[in-house]
Image (cartoon, rainbow, N blue to C red; front, side, top):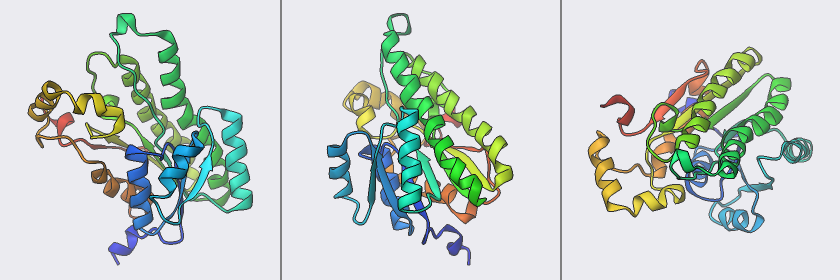
Length: 251
């Protein structure tokens, strides 16, 4: 009975930005839990390559920062294929520079990719979920939703906004049967963090700063995602679940 709460058989899950890294790992994990997975990205070639690694996955190409393209893609998919029961808002990017020299165009890209996309896709999918009276939305926040470090202040701002938008989604949509939560990863080995992983000084600092003493592996995010996507979290709403090896718990 208890394990059945985590079974996603018969559910359909859309994961944005799932051509690589965390998004691809979460898509694989949701599929392993029984869900039919829909991969998303704006680069059709990269998405096709990712789909080859996730047997039976569907693909939906759209730019998550383009409100009208998102609405058309989601509405078209719902009409032609069927309902999206689970949405994982994972699309994101990083740009590192001292705040006093941070390029304004990079700041705008961060705002669009990391926070506007959560609004655009979340709203488009939620409209259908609300009509059905059920749905799961999992936004990917960050340890930087609560902490900051040099050279990524705008990224920190966007991830703080993701955490608060998650609370807003829950406040507006829980009454319609939706559960809206977020996962806040700590430091994981991903393409987004490739430069940091390759820096021995940073990895040594991270090992000392994180109680677990190491980088996270993307598959270690799957359990949290399955939980927040399943019946096991039926009364969990507006929560930000930190998966960070203890870094936010320790000075």
